[in-house]
Image (cartoon, rainbow, N blue to C red):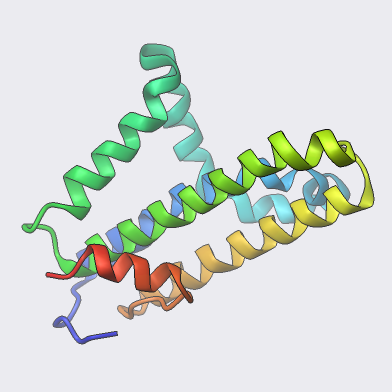
Length: 166
């Protein structure tokens, strides 16, 4: 990643906090693995404050609450030049992880579940792979952000960097 200056502690904290949104998006895929191994539920703890915020927004805005959060993050952080590049990059990367998880969720709900059912070994394996992959990417990014480094996730980082050039 191109060097964009040093990151102070405030940038590191905000850079790590945005990945709670990605962990929240991974909760949907956790059902099979957390039911079999409850210890994996601890990996979801950073996503629960976001679940409270989404629940609060759902009461007032209905189904547009998540869209409102997306617009606030995208327009208020990613497109705001007054926010440091480090925070904008990490915010864009977590937005892209969330979009990817939403697309996978739609494909599973509309294509795979009607074709294969909700309970078979194939569906459990897909849910577990998506859950573990998204959790691994989120925690890797949290650790890199806490260290003040740009997290490099193939394809997602390139797309995030292209949206946050300056």
